[in-house]
Amino acid sequence: MLTKRIIPCLDIKNGRTVKGVNFVDLRDAGDPVELAKIYSDEGADELVFLDISATEERRKTLVDLVRKVAATINIPFTVGGGISTVEDVEVLLQNGADKVSINSSAVKNPQLINELAQKFGSQCVVVAIDAKQFDGQWIVHLVGGKVPTELNLFDWAKEVEERGAGEILFTSMDNDGTKNGFANEALAKLSQLVNIPIIASGGAGTIQHFVDAFIEGKADAALAASVFHFKEIEIKALKKELKNNNIEVRI
Image (cartoon, rainbow, N blue to C red):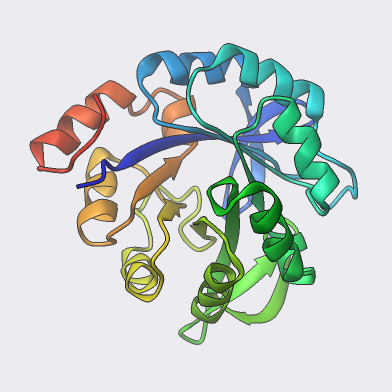
């Protein structure tokens, strides 16, 4: 049985780690390089770095910061934000990223998923999907959750898998930052629908929420930010409790 992964997420704006609620009301959460080292040392399985304003500000990801973070950790490192070309990915991989996460650019140019998978391998390509419920439908949003699309979460998830994505990072915008738990129903539906790993994101508030994401939501990994940044949950304690619930994790 594959072990379940715990993934802290560094949302970066102006070179600092930030965290908000439902994608707004951002507050400072610390220095990304310092936080990255702490998480690596504490037993996180991977680290995700999202330059959350790169797409909106129409600029590339903060490569210098990526390089500094990569130099301090010894776990797989995924970088997203402002990636729209094969060349962007080459630069990030050369500067320490192991995987890249694409979101808005994948929706605007789905062929990019195919190109990246062919050039770098599916294992390198994470497609992030931010979605929100309207009238019972999960609708995909772009540009840090600011722009709704016509796309349905489940149709888009199936398409990105077919195009060669190696993982899907699904964030429920309704749950994000609320600390009320992950969107387990949608997660379970996603994991039935596709054969690639699903990373749950949005809503972590307690250790039980992680347990539920793995058992009810059938997620392969769970990502969180503020509960780790503000020391509300410690990774070692979280993994111990997951083990107690017969969930396989790397200790």
